[in-house]
Length: 237
Image 1: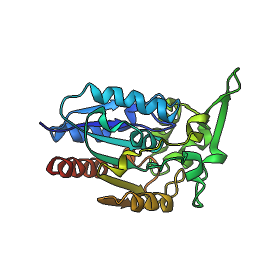
Image 2: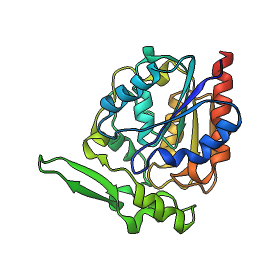
Image 3: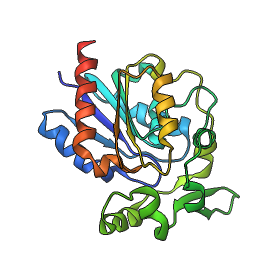
Image 4: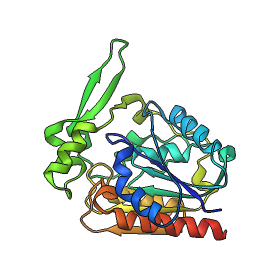
């Protein structure tokens, strides 16, 4: 049975951001689910994705973009037959680490200056990237028209989700991982992503020169190829 690929988007994106990747995975004969990540909190969102995985028969490859990497790292190991993890410009936190903390570990992120809060009456806040900053910040290697649409359809993330500490048992410690890195990522510095891949003892790390944080949108073929390779390796293992 071929593995089902579960694609988990991150902050300031939505499930349609995987369209180019999903098309290529479908063409290769693999079933695909682009999950709707709630973006409310690491533990909460991981439980939602874990519940989705429990409905899938057969092996599963989890793919996370950006904050979605924290989510797949916290999916319960017994949620299903998870054979591989793929981190696409994504966080792979250790226990107790948060996305916010990790983003400051290496210089280079300009996200803090680009986000705007949406305050709520209970004192909490969601975060979005300002529309006039979205192109340069998130997807500088895409045409302006595409960036404008992505800015308009971005999903806000709870500020608390980026500050929440990761759980005690990261899935990448037990499941083989691969990493895709854009060298011009302005959300998560490439230096940090390299360090996370090394720490996770990644089976494969691919860097794309000049690629932005939206590397799966600007380079869907390369992203799909890495996922397909991870699926094959996971199946063989």
